[in-house]
Length: 212
Image 1 (cartoon, rainbow, N blue to C red):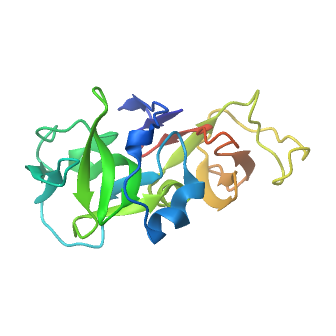
Image 2 (tube, one colour):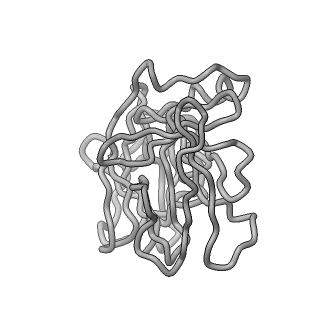
């Protein structure tokens, strides 16, 4: 599926990538999130909004052998971040997100270049970045979602045979709540229902808009 920045500003195709090499030394934290694998990733490493900084901060990226690769500088005044092509990036809005393919041994393994599928490590102690499971990430960061009315229609409740609901295509649907594989949404008039945000295969079923 697709994650996008806004109504017309940006879109980014998500690729379903998972390999044996994507797994680090298992940890208790990894076991807790393993059931949340979606599109080959455990979640997203994003900017930690609880940390105070002005327009610039820096963080370290490590090679897979845990040696330092580069110190990355993020600036809200820039259109890009040197050396990385994140999953989502909009510096002026403090949006920078890396897909996380593994967690363990004190590090997050993330895709630092979505074009080349390059993977590096980020320390779990990095104060300016934070790991978010998929449900948490969608509810926290998504302005709105889109979905296919043919194979993922809006329904009245979380049962597959529930009544299909009619809706206005011109409305935005905002995430409200997640129960299992189901996402509750509401439109601009506070009307809504439930759609599936993922399936049993771990595929993302919604398009997410970060900004509008």
